[in-house]
Image (cartoon, rainbow over all chains, first blue to last red; front, side, top):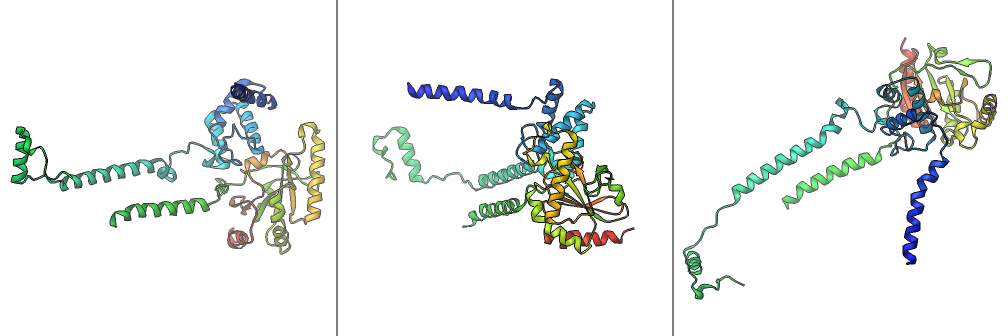
Length: 164
Length: 196
């Protein structure tokens, strides 16, 4: 019973945690539409300070500055693509979580498919070679006689001679 | 025995990839600005509050733009090298003082008046330079970090080598090491000085 209560309490606390955080955040969003677009754009962008965090999620100071910059670009009426270009021109393709397809990223985009194709070719070659190696089993005259006796239901031959 | 050679080979290839990957610094992101004109700006100078600086003022010279701040620990490590380099008269170094007050994370700028921030910036930056030496021909004040964004600054210190036409030719991310200075910056600067 006690344990259950503890689990319940933990669950409630965990549920409340994001709410408590949301209360701490500064009310930067004067315009919810701008904020929603800012978040949708910056979720696709990498924070350069904490590289495994998106620009939307990072609490690094640079991320804050860049979010402010994105907001002001949205207010200026820039398109999503223009805003992305703005950041790429300063920080490089690295800010994009979805790298563009271009000659330097061909290996990145198509490499896995090349490896897959190689694996399939290897598998086919292996199976073909193995199929060539398998020879149909040959039966000696004695084996044949034993098999026939078995099929005929002769009880004397129900004990195969090579049984361990 | 032979059948183990292929997995072993694949394993060795993997080891090589991982060894190379693990030894690279993920924080060194190649800048797209190398080979492009240095973004223009106009900022107040540190020593002479009435004057502004813009990169066009350095036209015709090969120069370094060094991003620094008094709160930046790595800048302190780099600084003696810059001071010694400036004393030899190698290249003119312009300082870009980056978010001096906002960047330290301790002062809430929202509570400061506009001129208070600039006063505080000047006080802190000047005090730091008089304590550690001033290698800069001048320092420009980027208090809100907007110019930093235009230059793709994401980790102070960063240094840009800019040629006579105002094109960025090299970017050093993080402190300049004696090795980077000797092997990259100086040879390139020498070559750039020869260009018209």
